[in-house]
Length: 263
Image (cartoon, rainbow, N blue to C red):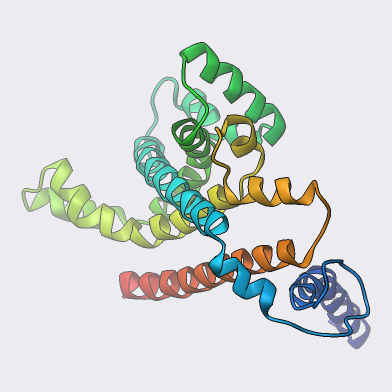
């Protein structure tokens, strides 16, 4: 690669970094503005908007509500997605392609169409809008991501380990619990964090299937309807820091788990 190409790639990379991070930096800075209006210049600074987030009972309860939904939907999607991945990977049977296609389908449908379909289906089933309906929709949407990640990890599992366990007298369940499942832990953890973040950030399905208690994205949207303010920036920044911290921890933990498993 010549010098000109390296410079071009470097400039493109840093332009992309600026495109992604400058808006986030401006959002964070606006949360420190000592005024109710968004805009530059920032003549005075304050921490009141950020301290207000942690003293606002509505925001804290909504944050907890969103976390509960994210955790429960992630547990369901991980259980179902892992089961489907184990069922499909390395096996050939009639209907495998159809099952795989139906598993991936929720990830391919546009969010607004998916939300409308879930709302109609929930009404037909008699499921009331609220936490249960949101968890159900988020879990269905997240199953494809779990299945794909686990299948990718499962495809690298040495078959000799399973065969050795079977030769030593282990039945399929024991072989799965002692060989396959520990090998899949890094992939399951990575998929879990990804699903957790997807569910926490999901607005469309939460909006269509939510009841009277909003999730955090819906609450931010409701506040936006009365105009932008540093309060919204502070709430968004706190959510950004929490999700970014969780993602960084998960990425490092997953790498360490993969190294331990491979050795």
